Image (tube, rainbow, N blue to C red):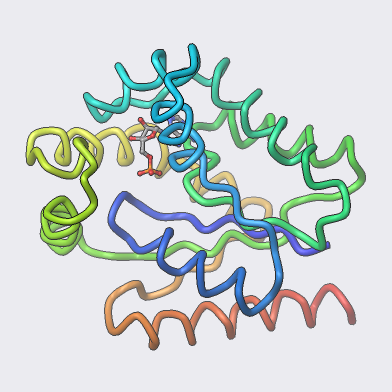
Length: 196
Ligand code: AMP
């Protein structure tokens, strides 16, 4: 198995690049943001709870998010690996993921971190807001809050994974194709190391 976290702030290109990686490597893509949006569309209880946090750019509580993620992984028992997109976002989520994957005999192999300057992120998210239909992309105040939440609660995970020797920084500025190329190189190096 090859399990990868695509890490980075909102607007870094995680969703776009996940699509490229899963097409090339045949991994299962799990985006907790997409899962929450699906719950919201279907107006489930979980969706209603998540909406109040998402609309403000806050994180949905770990107690809800971790269970949802684990359920999704369990739905793919034969997977050759996973791309986690937008998860983990807190230290508790990262620790839970380590424990959960350990329990099924696997682990995270690489954390590919898309690095993009703040002003570029705001620009990209406002652009995306014009077409994505996402309420949390349309309002600059919510965007700024999401970036602040990332800096406070999620960016410390970089050190968590550096300590495990799994953090790989990737320049997230440039054309989509160039960034895909950088990610492919990192995935190839990761799988080569696993097989050596
Ligand atoms: P995303 O699509 O990854 O930008 O996520 C959109 C929103 O969903 C976030 O601003 C959070 O409100 C919520 N969300 C997504 N993933 C998580 C997570 N791992 N933990 C908590 N909240 C999350």
